[in-house]
Image (cartoon, rainbow, N blue to C red; front, side, top):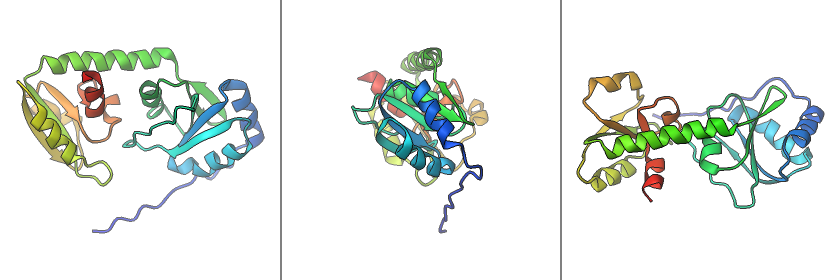
Length: 208
């Protein structure tokens, strides 16, 4: 079955003069990356050409994306809505991260980042003490990482691994299985929504 993806755009045109002033006032860093969700691609493009910052990098962010930032980037500006991507990007990049939403700019606080760090460390300790590991795989295009799941399965020592494959992963179903710890290879943002999931990439980083 062929799949057609149709991009959506916001209908309301923002006040670019106001946004330019906000960015100059709220973001002290000079070299920035602009990240955006699909509906804000035009806003991000227009901003990059008018703000008094050097835009080193631009990229669209999805729930399943894991962007890498050039070393010259000093801060991240996310054009979008909510904290779903923002806290995770701030934690993973260790860069000052700002959200531009509804003509206001909010900086992700150190408290939000520390909360995620503590949660991840707690999950890692749980993983180390677990015997039965559930490995989550989705078959959705762009999120399917079955090869990574099998490589991780083969690398397990002194633990029993079980691979779970589904189109939609429902965390409410986890209690039906006698699994000590869940490792996610699907959407890397899934671990933000539940305290019982450890993302594979973060796990591998912690083990280095």
